[in-house]
Image (tube, rainbow, N blue to C red; front, side, top):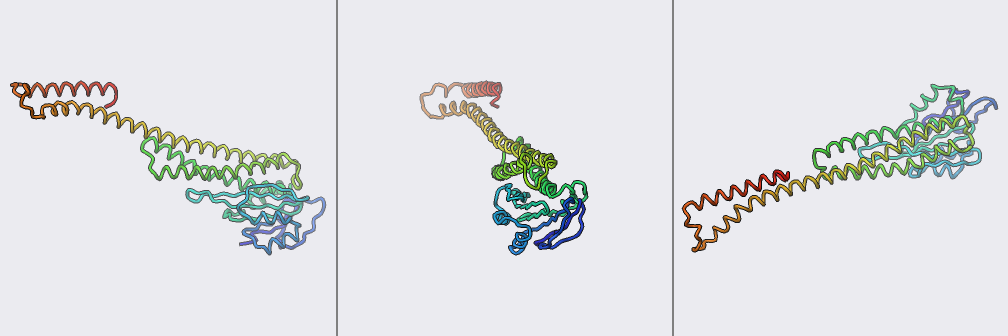
Length: 322
């Protein structure tokens, strides 16, 4: 898949489809532009777009890479924004990249490694002509907002897993697989933080700086994107703390349970040491042992053993060792 959509917009309404190398004429007072969406594009298509819309070679080079952090660059009168998309695959967060070239009369979005289509985004934007008439700056906001909103389901799903694990750790010991999952999720969330930081910087620059193709009345919209990024960042920080607390709580609980078992074993060992010691003394088979010929010696020894064992049992019970 390469070209997903290429449309001409005038005054907030879609007029018709266009080709990649088509030149469109706009009146000075109209809010017209071309919005081209590509997915896993080819070198030939990027060369065509570079020639038609004067895209900067460095920006094109960044757009075909899927391993770069989010960034915002200015090339003459154009903007280049690179955002990272994310999706949850099992216990792993999979990343892609969406590059957006923004000019006064064009928006070119290039998705690499992202399966989340922009069809729903395009339908939503086209359903609000008054906002779409604001120009290419609003389209840039819509794309960034769409990407950031995709972060929330990831965090929510991981949060459900972490809270379920936290609840289970109160009742049973965490198994080896649970401990491995804790560290895997922790690693994935820390990687996610390294994406959220630059994404917040991109949104912050769009709010604070005077940039080409972005009017001043668009700043509240980008501020909303920034708030969403911060919200996700706070949620990720909280999940990291919960994961650490789950592991620490499980470790402390296991130590406490081990201590209880150790005390119980020590108490029973002390109780059993009494008959063992007495039986050991009278089992030495010496001939000169006066107690052996006592008429009621056997019953006396049993009574002594029972009394001492009962005393120790009561004592350990009061100490909550048993």
